[in-house]
Image (cartoon, rainbow, N blue to C red; front, side, top):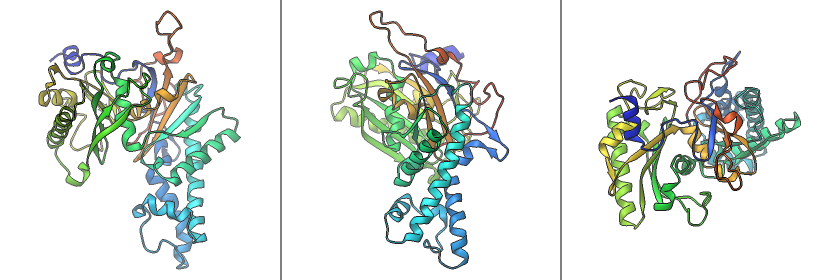
Length: 389
């Protein structure tokens, strides 16, 4: 099947990994950079925080006074660390605060490097998502990084993403859809694919309450930890198809007017035909193979939703998570998202404002950059690796 035919068959609306969406232009995503110590994203990941925590535990461990005992740092839950922040053990609290401070310095350093690239120039606000954000220690690290950048005269706000990290990638999928969907339907099914989990959700648009989709919510979801099962690629697609069919059936039983549309958030650089160019190394099997196309595979399993042909649009997971913030970014022009997970996902957006009266899109300056194959190359030729939440 020719690329143009495949795109039309699996979307019916736009191409996968598009640089222009209904609400925003995507100036860049999945930028990969290196410094003298290696990949930049590795300095502000979940793993980086655990390494920092372990360094602060080391001197206490030598004296036999480690408040965490023998538990490896990577196994200590965020809930436990959050409890330590307000607990009675002053030394344990000090260890966690020290780790937060060091991590915030790393996050500020990495953010500074992004802001100095051409693609991120004039960024006014950065929202931070990913699993790390879903904790008090994550919120403190983000707030501290924000203060550090402001002290260096960066005119930027750094804030936690509003939606729960487990739901942001599902809610963001609404912003991949064309506006006609919201006039005719009240919900979609969405998929958020990660290196450990695959989450599917039924997302209610809330369009009648707020046409900017600020009232959207996940009403049902299903999580599969594929990393525990270690499936083949074909097995993963089969399980995902089954999950989606289950949600589609439930939506019908519950009286939702489900759109014939599936929005997908997936790691990597997504090509226009739905193939994945790079960045999917943590997914089960080889998802970067020229012989594999996830949207096309799902269309085979779910050719119709209700009485209409199924349309699918897939984009980078960091982009889609960031899209959940679109309704709350309308007071500025340029903004970005960083997702702290296994690595550091990233995307930069320019809002597509409407002219008063004419209804035509105003070109958003920097938003016309190609965000597909150019991502990760950047004009300054910096290269490296970005991770997945």
